[in-house]
Length: 112
Image 1 (cartoon, rainbow, N blue to C red):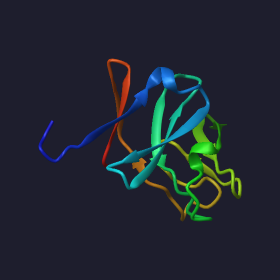
Image 2: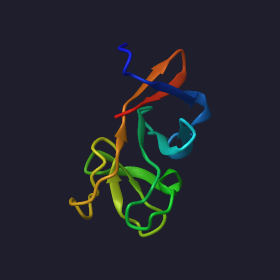
Image 3: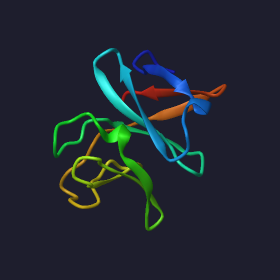
């Protein structure tokens, strides 16, 4: 790990219900949405829905479209690719994707 890498522990894998999200704060001001898929993959994206400006993506419906893991915003139902952050419904819009890793069952979220 270099001095520039910052990893924040946010929760344990066991804290997340598969196909559900949870919100977390990085450094007290940056909201991220953490997801655990049914395949036990962990993903983190910005929690802010770019269409409404509301911090609600962690409350979205998790699933997949053509094998791609996505979350549907609870506001206007746009789907966001959990791997790339791209909006499936409007590819000109994206959300930030955060790197994640798991150490001893704890999920750590890094800065992109």
